[in-house]
Image (cartoon, rainbow, N blue to C red; front, side):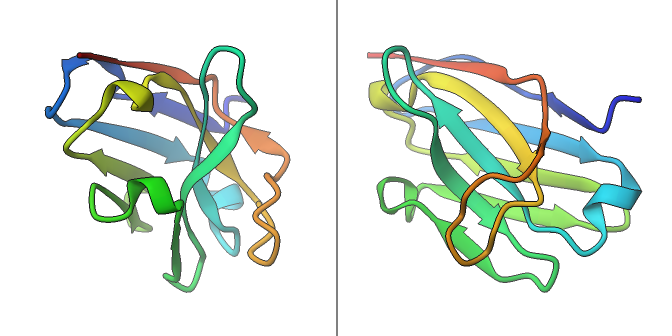
Length: 120
């Protein structure tokens, strides 16, 4: 069964905003950190932001002050609000669950990915 379903990607001009959402199966959401990774063409997949089951949040340095991650456990949704987008934010964004909160190595649960394209 589908366990992580993403939505909200698209095309936006530089300086604009997008909101990504990840609906997570309840059994996976409970007790696991959930977050977003991204992969740009020719680059490695990298952590964007994550929120633990206890509400602690990790941001990559390059999104601090621009992106906000939130977790709604009642609705089983983890969202990523992206403001002040830059061309270099262009990538496929993946929702992930179960990552290590020590090393931030991704866990074994992945969404299908959603394309974010920022035009300059």
